[in-house]
Image 1 (cartoon, helix red, strand yellow):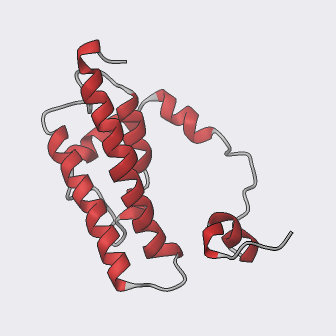
Image 2 (tube, helix red, strand yellow):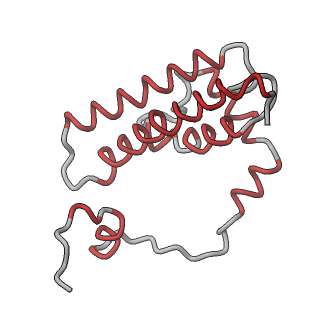
Length: 150
């Protein structure tokens, strides 16, 4: 939970993750992997912004075990969820966190927690649809299609 004195900083980092790290990581993945056209401007813009957010977090984590204060908080959980996808956000390397040693250390410490193993197991027995067909694209990206007449 963190101490009451840390709540303002906690909210600030949650906003950083929710409005920066998360969306720019998502857009980087979209334009690098899912967009029907590989637009160099969009690929570059969102990849560089994701890298910038990783740099901010990496610098903040220097000398710290957690994002806020001295204990594990919702900010760590939220940040971990996005950083877990670094190989999609920052493709091209066997170790996408190599340039971010503080994130790498923090990530692996959180990744070793028993709760992470339990979370990773959720849905592991479900057969998810794997092909990306027209139905999938319309579901994932509805704003790309005109509304259908009722």
